[in-house]
Image (cartoon, rainbow, N blue to C red; front, top):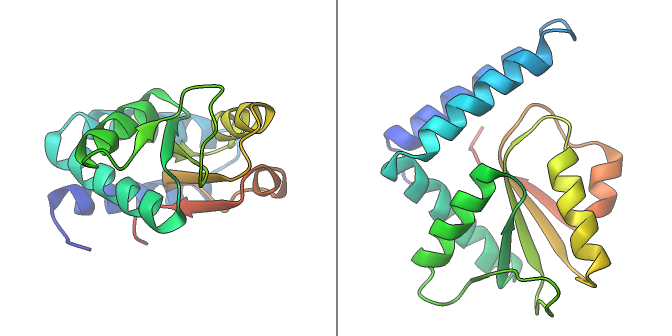
Length: 159
């Protein structure tokens, strides 16, 4: 994986999110929200969007997911970029469709997991058999409930 300014900026945000997770419980949501806003700002930079879209495309290919869906606004932006860069190998998931190989759900930041959980639940209700989650940043490892909703969950930003 190449190291560039986008990767460096994302790694710095990941470190900041880990540090915020060690703060008092009443401060965590506010810090996570601020980091999420900075991630959104980074996501409009072409270099960052291209880097994350490449990570998502690679994960989709290695996990056998031919369809992608965003669990958040940031996730939707990344999904659009990944589909555009995939040379027709990936498509956006359109409910209800058979998603051969599964669906990759993309989210920007995992704090509570509610957006990813809601999207995974909706996909399961649509009959999707394999659901893989991908987040750019994670405050902490996902909880057991989220792990039950997805077949795999990957944090994209290198630690």
